[in-house]
Image (cartoon, rainbow, N blue to C red; front, top):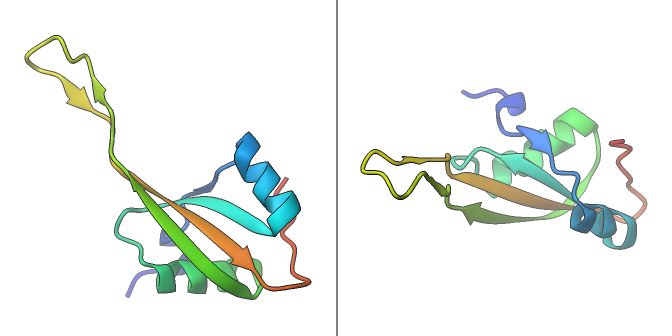
Length: 94
């Protein structure tokens, strides 16, 4: 069985993510593409000891790099998770 720390790679701190956390109590994390919503929810609850209300995910395809050559490469595919915490819960990430 996998560890809960394997399901959260990093916190995404962008301008949009900051607005979501301030106004709507939603936090954005980068997760592995194989992680599902239940695993992400359990990982947040165990690591941060907060109650999770909802988890939304979005898959992103890796970009092509050096397209004009025959041996082009790709950046890896990744997944973003937007986690909504229950009323009264807050995360102090930064």
